[in-house]
Length: 490
Image 1 (cartoon, rainbow, N blue to C red):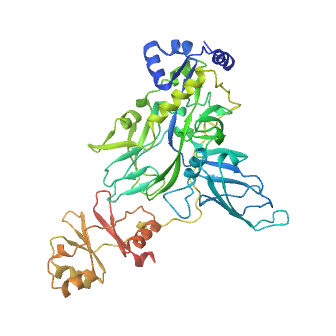
Image 2 (image 1 turned 90 degrees about the vertical axis):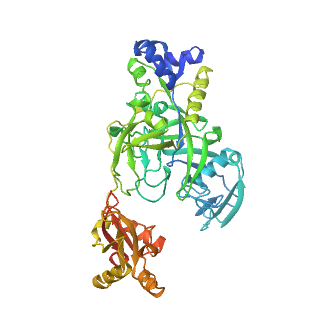
Image 3 (image 1 turned 90 degrees about the horizontal axis):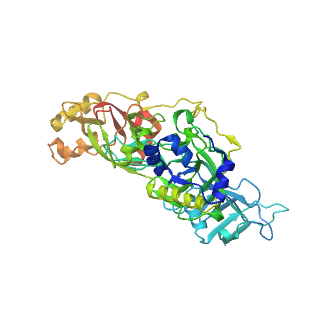
């Protein structure tokens, strides 16, 4: 039995359409089967709410008197892109404020606009005959703007990897704060509530699809950037009117030592046109597979530590190498459910009709990495042999190795080659001057390290930021396999 958009929209207008959320659909198909579910259910609602860094807004301020053509402009000290017409701009959510980096950014500006707060608009111009005003400093609210269009090049990813950290230092990432030595793991997405998990072949989600966006009505205007459907990483390009939206569903977020973004609420109705869609919208969390990835490895193709699924991720912990690791979301399942239910209410009340897509999204595109014309250098390209002493050596033996090898750094390990610390020639000189004989008293135990496959530029940055001149190189069992020094990098 097949249905049409016309038939379903007629039932919505008459307020007799049967609407369920994606979570409810799972139970219905389990109890009644996909054939009966296809006959009884008209629409399944979905929802997701999490950080969507590829988001922003086009704003039009109207003309000042005399007119100005912005060369640069700031909204609450967040630099916005002006390269459109004279008083149009685009503000991206990840742009940080000049005076408060990591504390405030474009995502916060958009949330403040939608909340009705006044925003300081400051700008300057090169001036022309038709745009003679050189500077402006004023305040605006959302109601003062002619247009305020949320325009998000990449939202609602079909799935996300789960991030963890194998290194011995804390990492600050767009997946949140990752503790050292697999101290935690983070994931994103709402699993079985996620829109693209319920229509993975884009039968109903396409160009022109009407959606819930930020608490208002929005539209799909194409596939998103980095759209990779062949690997189950589909994305959506979305737009909507900020003046319809609600700050409950657009939240600026500031990540410690990383930057700013914005949580965006997206809900998409899936019309049940046939039995196939009934099956797809009954997807379970355990059916949505993803990977646990080591973010301690700073490269494009990070090592996959294991495959997992959203049932395990949502349980609060994952198993890795025989250990249990605390696992938490960086997105909100509570808000995702709230969005699916609010969209359900809109449909039940006849306030939201479905749009058949004008064109289907691309289904066979593969994501391509950046083309790099210059060869990237890695730590392994500058590695040299580490001069090693064991942690039970005395200071005299370390001093002799410094002289014999003309070395400034001695790496201290146990007898199995596991790193225990590092000693410099200055440490030895100071120890002799102070008449110290115990090696353990002068070892620097908190050692900044690197790996063979780390880009040399990152290793160099580590040395600069920590004001050190060498990094021991470890393998993935934390055994010393070499050293890289500032001399090699210079």
